[in-house]
Length: 114
Image (spheres, rainbow, N blue to C red):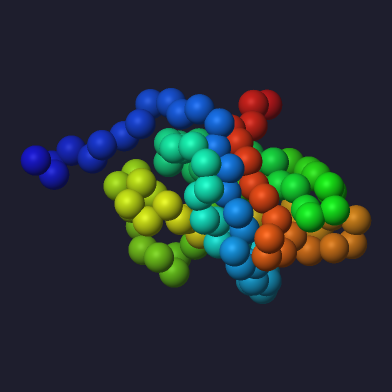
C-alpha cells in the first residue's frame, strides 16, 4: 500500500561500476555507482558499511561509506531497485590509492564483512 517501505533483509554479492567521482571539499569524494550485477539491500550500502573498490590496473582497497549524496534525494530500496544507481560519499583518505584518486571505470563490490 505504500505506507510501509519494502526493505530487503539480506542480499548476495553485488558489483557497481563507478561512473563518476567528484571531490567534495571538507567531505571527501562523491562516487556515482551504477549497478552491474546482483541486487544489494540498501542496508548493505548504508553509511558506515564497506565496499571493496578495484581500479583498472588491479589496485584494490576497502572503503567506508561516509554518507549518501544529497543530490538524488533520500535513498530508498525502491529507488535503488528501479534506477540501479546510488550516489555515496567516501572520505578523502579512502578515495586515494597509491596517490591516485578513485575514478570513472573503477569497480565497487560487496558486501564486505568486517
